[in-house]
Image (cartoon, rainbow, N blue to C red; front, top):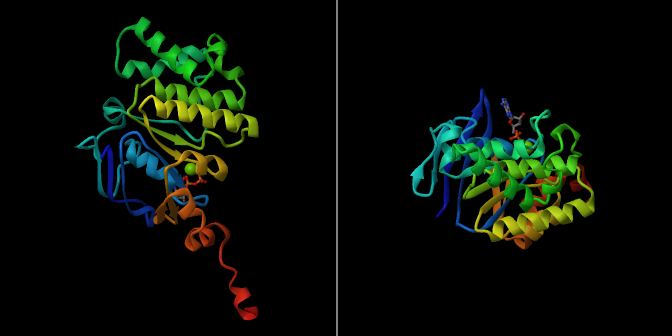
Length: 243
Ligand SMILES: Nc1ncnc2c1ncn2[C@@H]1O[C@H](COP(=O)(O)OP(=O)(O)OP(=O)(O)O)[C@@H](O)[C@H]1O
Ligand SMILES: [Mg+2]
């Protein structure tokens, strides 16, 4: 197993944003992570990559316990993530942004530049390499988020809503890019609200609701599960009177 999440809980004061979540992920797979707003998806990413310390449980990556390590140590071990809200270094060029991550594994500027450029090619943004990043549009910023993560040369890539706000053509484009990244051997966990995209990309999907894992299965199993449908659409208790 590449990643093992064992009974992980993350509390913010009295709120369990992630509550006793367990799952395993094999190398080479794409795992989908879905759930309503506030379900704890981003918090789980923050726990995996060490942005936030976990309250209980253990996280094992490549046989090594990573819970308790700092995020830069976890990055060096091979976990990278994109952020839901894109935050490029606005006054730096697209290429300079994409290079930053490479310095977690190399000290050479030239090597970092070539890794950054490769990452930009993967996300089809190399034609914007010399543009100052603040001039990129949303779709391009989302691609740059992925390139920044890729340049750390990860084994596991965590993608947090990289398709939110994109046009349907841009979504299709992004689905293709994510497949290509996965085909190079990088394991992926993807959070996404666009069902069509996540259903077509993921081999398995985990559903969170109020911090708890309520379902894990194939896209087909998940989309037909009553608990999942209720989590998304709620149960209208008033209906029972007329049932
Ligand atoms: N740093 C924090 N401090 C306190 N509470 C937080 C913090 N981060 C998240 N939360 C709370 O934890 C819960 C889960 O939030 P999280 O951002 O993980 O949800 P999400 O599933 O990513 O939602 P969305 O789909 O809207 O991005 C929410 O109630 C949120 O308000
Ligand atoms: Mg989120």
